[in-house]
Length: 153
Image (cartoon, rainbow, N blue to C red; front, side):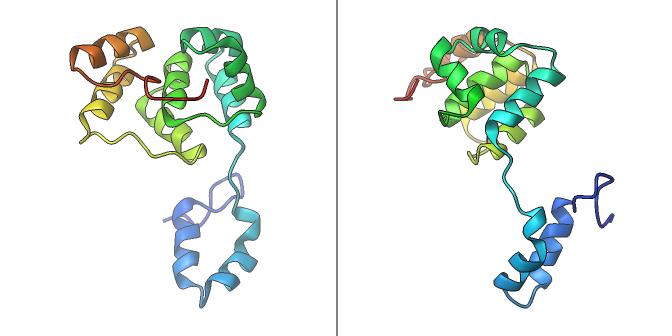
């Protein structure tokens, strides 16, 4: 097991080891404060756009999000619901793993394959389907559409 990644930040496994090995939580925080951070979602979204060679406006359109709301997500002035993040995942063309990372970055629950709705969404992501394809499958299964229960955006 490697103690730290090549970029100098300790791995998650190493942080967890330190957490459990510390004599108390305050000492752990004092010794590991530099490695304890939550990346800002807007920066993560910008990086995903760059790595997938997409512009935010394209992602917003492909995600079937309101234009103004979508730009607020990208500039960090709005906090998205879990479903809005899933819409962004479709807009970005993310893999299941990338989607799980996006949800984790936004401090939302991961997709869970034992839940029928989540399994359907995961399968669509896995197959590279569009948001419309996912909505069609969810409708066929009698499940809530993505963004269908959201009050924001």
